[in-house]
Image 1 (cartoon, helix red, strand yellow):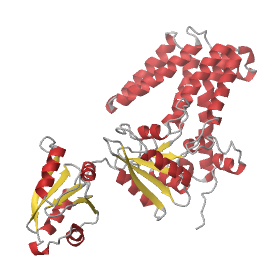
Image 2: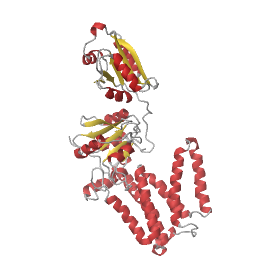
Image 3: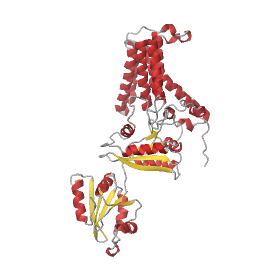
Image 4: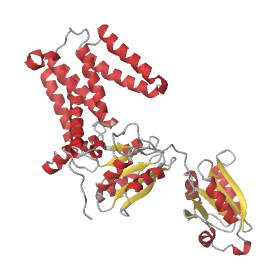
Length: 469
């Protein structure tokens, strides 16, 4: 429905449609501009009051004979604000209002003036808890979309940086920003992503980026290795944009979705570049080695415990000091689940109790569980290493992918011994080799297809590149 030139008719329709008598946070106010009645609609808590105070002061000086016949001329001549647009359709006006925009209707004009004077409630910009760095900037994304785009714009001051806004969700009408660098982005992938977002038929993106990720890439859900890299660091997002990646920002989410992403992209971290090349290379290689150890350490130890005759003489110390009361497979699996239980408990533990409860949990589950005979000390040692080493990389999704693959190898090794151990390792390799990025390319490029020059860059951090203009 289009607006009419009668303010009374427009207000009656909107008040009924928006149910303003029931919604206490949806407010409207009538006043006069040049002796014409006007109505301002806004959401309480979304609008900057100081902006409208200044606008009202300017409106009070307009005389009746100065009011133009056309609303477009009025907005150009008398509206002292930059972010103003005209809307004729009421559905578009209501969606704009519910996203936080203020809407002004004036008697005699058949269009609504939509003013972007939003001031979303948000927390301060601070360093992300999960993406901390030893050196470098300490700012991070927040839940407000415009703040996140501003953090990126602050780092890339180039007109080729493009940020397109899209919307998804019939009820939520969630804002989605697609950021890319013209001339470096994969245009085919960009067009595909845009088309998939346009075709989304969902009621709401209740879980923000995860809901969007599952909608735009619904294939091969059984492969645990992540297709997207998530980062709460604007410097990481900016560097990815300059490398030709696409960044997707979703309103109400404090992290950026980076795509396409391979296994090497996900393991990479900002600390690799905030230190000199030698130190950065050491940190990167350490992270790769630790990631491999978290995946294969406990299955390899279990295999040797089942075949002690294969243990070389220099590794004899890894044998059990006491015979197990509970089969080793069950010990390892119980600890895998117990660690997740402690992690979930830590999330819901009040911060003031975190330290004392951690000490109690360490004593009870460490010393007493060994003395009780439930676990061997060697089992506790190796699982402790795996648990702590899993935090050497920041991706939760990759950590759980390693966990699921590790548990599968443990079960196959316990059931089928040597062939189960080999089969589990082959399964983990196949999960990587036959996986594809969202762009349809190899998940382990530049290993497959093999490119030595690119592979060297993945393992060894050289000098930061200087792109020619």
